[in-house]
Length: 349
Image 1 (cartoon, one colour):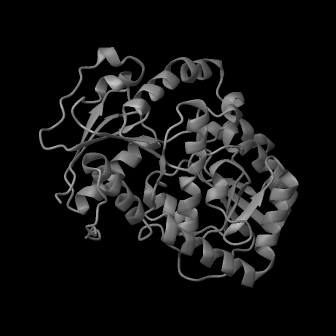
Image 2 (cartoon, rainbow, N blue to C red):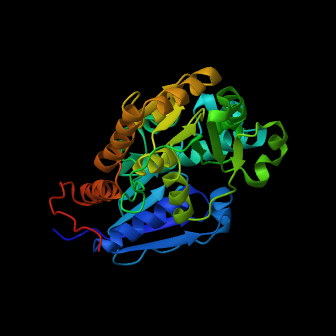
């Protein structure tokens, strides 16, 4: 059976979906599968009629798109795999959108996604939470869950060491209320001198900095994977009080570095953090619970080392980039031939 050949028409939006497309295409090429990305300007998302429809290469056997891509750009003669990256239609997100963004999602993106999902031969969601949200709010159809994979060779623990004193927590993410950043200062104020938090605030956090306790340190926006890996390898635990996550990639990256997570019990976070095994889940917005979880993580070195080991083991077994790519190749072959792909993919060089 010949390998599939994948064409990615994609809007360059400057988001995590762009990173996903580039990483997947690179991984497929490293495994001998022909791919090409055709980047479309951002206006293709909100004014698709203003962008010329590109012609797929003759060698392509399957098209892979983001569910937000307008169906205008889907070739009629090729099978389509669509990936759902977000849970933006979940009602819990409404308070954090703003009126204009909420209307954009409701009146435009929802319609685009429904049409693209109906046209697609295979639909993939990046978490069970995203799949369940899409079935309730967009279109009830079979969906395969494939988690976005982490490069476990790059994201790996530092050499074995004892926790820092004070115990070092890390927050990596956008400085927005949906991520629960307003909870970070109260949590750190309750924890006091025995703990410190390094956070990626930058200019977005300037207004909130005056109300922060002295055990919080802004490390700015991290540029590139190397900076993210270095910050994670230097952390003792990952503090992530996010109120909703479609796919918690940053948590998986931290766990790949052997950093146990302290996160909110809800959304897709419960699919990654196993309470008491590789981290701790806390009730949403419960400052006291998050502070207590941090203390419990820091107080027993043997338990802490077990959390670190289990975090790394889980990512390697369930969330590796190799597993992600193998699952996508199966989808490509299934939608083009209707058969199961048996060939074992070679490892990356």
